[in-house]
Each structure stands twice: as structure tokens, then as C-alpha cells.
Length: 139
Image (tube, rainbow, N blue to C red; front, side):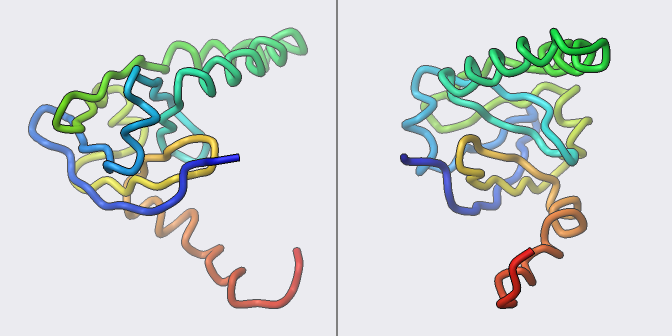
């Protein structure tokens, strides 16, 4: 199984676009989907993976009102994206606001998706777990 790995730092341009790292671009030649994701980041999905996520959301929406509302919110906030020839990807204002993307953007592979983070949010929410790599204990 191949997946998305690696970490890259880019900046939003004046039009709210970010350059997608060249390592990731081939997977998005036919486009992709950008959505709100857990812990305040954005997820960039390939078309196939987005369809799988939609199926999961649809299935879970049958379970409860809360799950239906989560599926609604996720679908309503998702946005189809095309990457231009320079590798730029537009990020709609509502998604930039959700993820607090203002200047710098941390873009990294998250196995089945690409995530876009405000660097300060990454430092606060994710970076503390880095110590896990320095321990021998299993959690």
C-alpha cells in the first residue's frame, strides 16, 4: 500500500492558494477534495479516498441524529479542488478560517490523505506526541 508521507512548509498567496508539494501532485492530477478534519486541520483527499470516506459517513449517518449532523457538516464543508499547472491549490475562505490558515501552512502526508495545518496548531496539538518516538514503552 502506498500512502502520503513527508512534511513540507509553504505559504498562502494573496489569493488564498497554497502550493501542493510536487511529491503529492501526481495523486491529484484529476483533482481532489478538501474538507474540515479533526483537531482543526484540513484534509486533502484523492477522489477515490473521498468516495470511501463518503461511504463511511453515509453508513454512520444511519446510526443517530448526531452522526447525521456530522455527515452533513462534513459534506457541506467539503470542496472539490483542482491543482493548477504551477501546483497551486485554492483554499476557500471558510476552510482557511476553520483551520486558522493565515500565512504559513504546514502540509504533510497522513497516510490516506494530505493534511494542512496552521503551524502553531500543529505545535500545540500534535508535536507533543513526538516524544513517543523517544520512549520504549507501548501505549
